[in-house]
Length: 460
Ligand code: TRP
Image 1 (cartoon, helix red, strand yellow):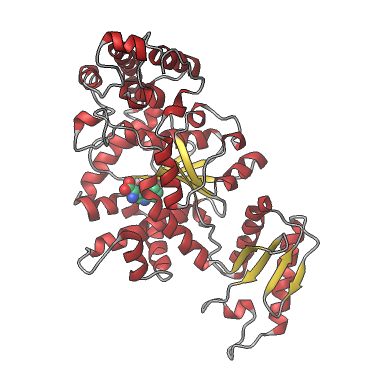
Image 2 (cartoon, helix red, strand yellow):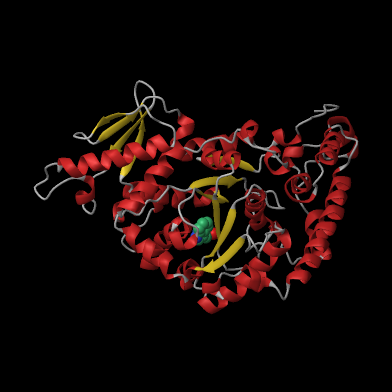
């Protein structure tokens, strides 16, 4: 490594692990070149995977509406790891998304035994206060509490009809002794994720859920539940283009033109196809092949990029006909920050992370003790250079504290070439982190009496 300078210092992250996570979970890789105005966040690879991010990128490109929903567990103290999700949220906010923040007070009650009252206190003083200081815009942000929004719980209940215990066993490993509150929590979370699409909460639009990858099981569940409610299915057509098929369900038979004996009501079916055709021609697809009897419609000219727009117009039609018209959520996943000690970051081990309320003194102690990528002796270090991939101070600069790309690259170069010693990079980290924490606490100060501005009317 000696003398080798790296233009792209973050390439040294353990990318293989993330490749494995992506493969195991069936996630897509973020294509940086497709991201408009890629800011530092993306070039540093904080977001390493996604589901259907293209749908949101399409909205950004066309200036169409989209929403962002994320959630927090109001238990324990907020630390740097938690702020990564806010970095993602802010990026979407800057691209025009409206923001909904779930306070998972019911989940916290179910899984951590936090009372609703305690959960509320922690959410406001630890999380929302810091979110404000980190730069969420109150005019674009709505914070609500699970326990105070009946529509979310109702939706969770309704979506529950589309799943069963076996699926929960498979996804979450639940068994006979699983506490039922744990079974309910994922359904409430599905309600959280879907509900911004309801007319009262902004209406039909794509919703992206930025989370840590540990939340992917919930995303997968929710996407499946939403799809199962859909009245129209979209599939790629073998010979190119897209096929739309009717999904006939117990509660939509009359609208789908299926009569009581299970036969087709031709008049209703043909009316339905006229409406479908009209929706599609409004999007510019005049050339469609219909087969009302089989309940299929083909659009030979449609390409992959058209799918989201077509889906949205079908969902709008479904809503007009009396269906729920729910779009499966999109998601993005950030990397896990390494703990100060080199292993996992955890709230229960304060030495592994920096808390938003840490004093400069506490922070400095932690950084000084942090796992280093330096060599055993100064001589060796000068000769071999430091190892960025193992150096926690460097990674904290990269993910949290150093905003300037050129500054970061130059630190990386100096460290890898051995010019910069382990103690020196730690000092840089301490200086930058001090600035960061001081700035955060000043901004927090400014918001102390104004947190209410973030809270939705139903959750005040
Ligand atoms: N389950 C999440 C956690 O453990 C909290 C949460 C609840 C959430 N509802 C959500 C996260 C909706 C994202 C979206 O932290």
